[in-house]
Length: 155
Image (cartoon, rainbow, N blue to C red; front, side, top):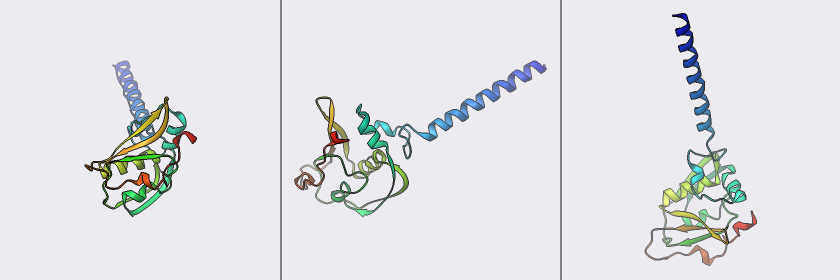
């Protein structure tokens, strides 16, 4: 009887340790600091420098910004974005975080504005982030300003 109880206690302790280790792994996330569970799937790329750039975490505060100026803000400025079907008018976006990755910032922007974002590649290397909105036509084209045209390849 004592052996059975000791065996069950050891099994219970082992299960507890495995659960605790699993919870710690989930807490850290795949995206590093500020990463959310499954966050690294958004803007997925096999390009290591781009992933490192996307997963770097920052303290940010965006207050009531329109979509046309969001992509000019730190820390998400610094790569090239191409825009398609972006409406002329947009709702105001706010975000405050002490620890959030660029990937998660872009993911929240995409969710808020119902945008699709993908990494476009040329010759197997990332060239830009394609941002596609839901407007029937591109009434507003931030590509015309050229202010956001910094090549991804320089990362």
